[in-house]
Image (cartoon, rainbow, N blue to C red; front, side, top):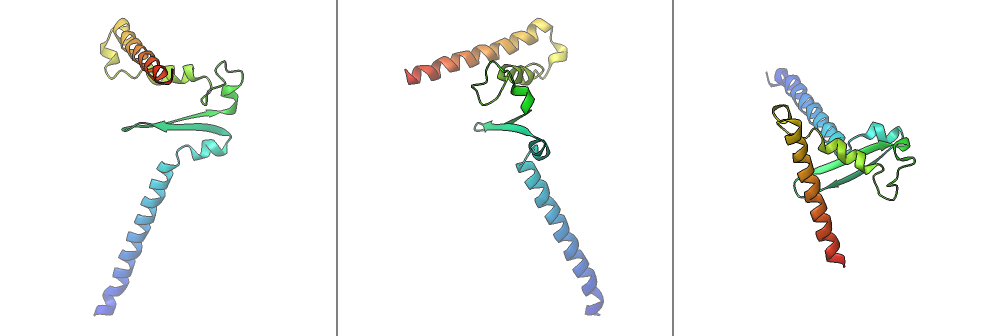
Length: 122
């Protein structure tokens, strides 16, 4: 009777191994975001802090003629605007003046932090 259940056990083990390998492939895909875009000629910049990670990807034409070409991310003002505007969680409940004031507060805080960082080097 034992031999009758062995094929089922082997099939179950094979299925578990396949599921595990699929999970591993999914995790690896998450660790390498935008792989297809990189292969298609896109560039990317990865950064992060203690509690977040950010990846910015762009095609080569995006940076052509960029006024801020000395930075790692071309057209960074466009990138920052795209991240910031629309990020308010309750934007549909806010008046435009309230929503954009929130964005201005973030930019002012960033300006303040840049001043503090610069002071560390002077």
